[in-house]
Amino acid sequence: MPDGTDVLEIIRTTRAMRRLKPDPVPDDMIRTILQSAICAPNGGNTQTWRFLVVKDPEIKKAVQVHYKRALDEIIGPRYASAAPPPGATKEGYHRQHTAVEYLTEHFHEAPVWIVACIEHGEDPPNRASGASIYPAVQNMLLTARALGLGATLTTRHLFYEKESEAALGLPPGVHSYAILPIGYPMG
Image 1 (spheres, rainbow, N blue to C red):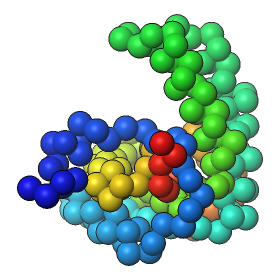
Image 2: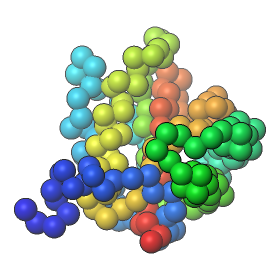
Image 3: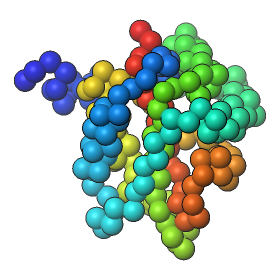
Image 4: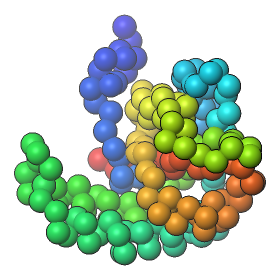
C-alpha cells in the first residue's frame, strides 16, 4: 500500500491535534473529508446528519466566547482538581491541559471548522441521537489524518448550546454534536 493509506496505521496514529497552523486548507481536502463522513453508518439509514463548514472568522470568534467560558467556568476547574486518568502521568496530563488551553485561545484561528449536526425536526434529541453522527465524525478525523491534517473532536461548545448554535446560525430542529477544528498541525 502507498504511504499514508494503511487504515490500521492511520487508526494507530490518529490523535487529538489541538495546535493547528492558521494556513488555509484547500476546499478539495475538505470535500474529501465530508465525503468520508457520509460513508459512515447511521441509524435507520435516515441520513439526518448535516455538516456545516465554517471559515468565517466572525462566526468562529462568536462561538469561541462560549467555548472559552466553558473552559473558565467548568472544564478548567475540573482539570485543576482532578488526578491524572489511569495510565497517564502527571506531566502528560498537564501537557494535555496545556494543549486544551492553547486550542481555547486559538480556536477561532483554525482555518476550517466542520460542525457535525443532526436534523431532529420536531423530535427532541435523546441519548441515542449521537449514534448517527459520531461514526461520521470518526471517519472525518481519520481522513484528516490520512491527508496530513490535524483535527480534534470537541463538544465543549455544548455547555452553552443555545448560545453557540445561535452564533453558528443553525436553523430550528438542527442541533450540533461536535465541532472539528481542522488545519495543518504545528509539529
